[in-house]
Length: 173
Image (cartoon, rainbow, N blue to C red; front, side):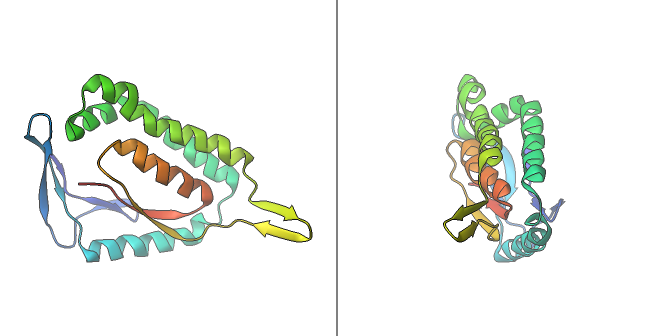
């Protein structure tokens, strides 16, 4: 059984403020596959504070730098596609062929599309005598459901990164 009790906060894996274990079951077999920790308010506060600090510099990145980051995510995503498909199959109880053909690639498609959109998006646009400027707004709170996990995560993470925002992600248990 996999031990997944740490949170990724401020660029490192950290222990929860108040350990509260939760056993993840494969719904197809009802067998335990992992132990996770359910976060507390203190964990959320720590994550939000880290995301606020990171926002100060990330919001200043150029479109070119953000596109490069998205391309790097795509590269790593592709290299770990089989691992993602296997994990999705276990946590959702989905047949592995479905996980490989649809579930895991769904998230990749969103990152690929975001690179295309980012290259064409007008962050500044003159409308008459008014200059409209779209700027990063701050820390995004992202909550995702259990179904289509990589699709749901990528639908939120990719545009936030492209827009210059930092985030705190809370996926389903």
